[in-house]
Image (cartoon, rainbow, N blue to C red; front, side, top):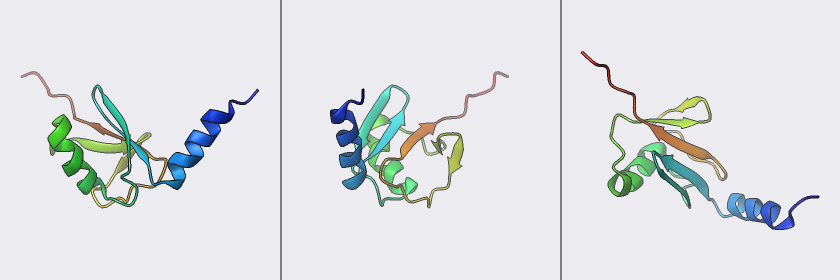
Amino acid sequence: MTNINESNSSEIKSASGVANVRFGVYNQPAPIAGKSIKDTREQFGRLWGIPTDAIAYKGKDKLDENYVVQPGDNVEFHRRAGEKG
């Protein structure tokens, strides 16, 4: 049995230019479709403290700073773990 509300909700998100942004404990759907990764990082970097060296991913794929976010994308920022010396 399909939940009609869930399928309608996902259709509304993709139609309105909403994508999901995630960094650490932060996770939020936002109207960022059509923006570049660079613009997205600047917008959420101030709020969430995303460092400039954090890498953006869509699934397992690394995203370039010029990648344009598509409706329904799940964009995650990950910072590379440091090494002990």
